[in-house]
Each structure stands twice: as C-alpha cells, then as structure tokens.
Length: 156
Image 1 (cartoon, one colour):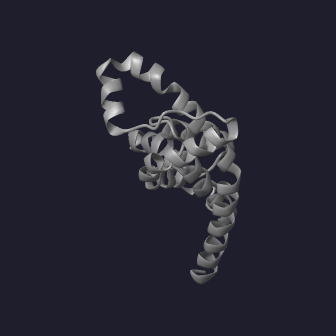
Image 2 (cartoon, one colour):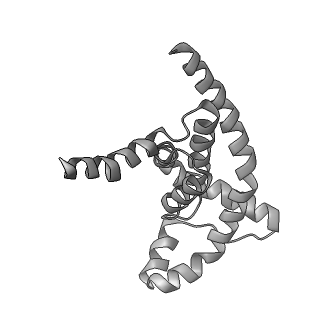
C-alpha cells in the first residue's frame, strides 16, 4: 500500500501535471508554434533537445511541443534549401550547389572532413532559418490560437 502511494506521488502525479501543463488555447498555441518552428531548424538532431529546453524554460506543454516537432520533421530536410538560399541572399555569398553526388563524395572522405566542408552550408541555412523564425512563429501562433479557441468553445 505504501509503495503504491509513493509510485503515485513520485511518478504518476508529476506525469499528469506535465500533460496538463499549458493547455489553455494561448499556451497550447505557443507550444505548437514553437515546436513547429524549432522542428524545421536546418541541422538534424538538435530540434528535440531544443524543444525540450524551451518547454522546460517557458513551462510549455512538453507533449504538444514535441508532437509539433515530430510532425514537421520531413519539412526540416525540404526547407534546408530555401533557408540556404535566404542565407546566401542575405550575406551575398554564393556556394556551390549541393548535389547527391557531391554529398556522397564528401562523406566518402570521412565524417570530420564532411562536417568541415558542409559547415558553411549549415551556417547560411541557420541564418536563413533565423530570419524566417519570427514571421513563421507569428503566423502559426495566431492561426493555431484561433483554431484552439474555436475547438474549446465547440467542446464546452
């Protein structure tokens, strides 16, 4: 009996609290928008950790932010090239076009040389992402908030 209470108090209640955290339309919209915008960050492998940190710091709904992050994952790869183009236009740099053959050739040299070779591409893509970040967030936030408020009034 005592072990059940400890399990409930130490594990179940904190998990339920985490799931209920930030579920009003405004906070939920912030969580979903943040997850979507962070989820398309041009460097693979960073978005999940970044979403977790943002959710913890701003006390956002962690499942919602991660759901949005995972839903936009395919767009992370697709949007790399538009973000790269924005970064190139902003800095005036023009890098060689990336092709499948060039990527294979670069990675055949090894991981470290490949990372060194592709660093410029990643930096410019991150710059393009940073420029698009605020407009994307604002558009998503207001669209999702309107939708969340409508859902909330429908299901009351």
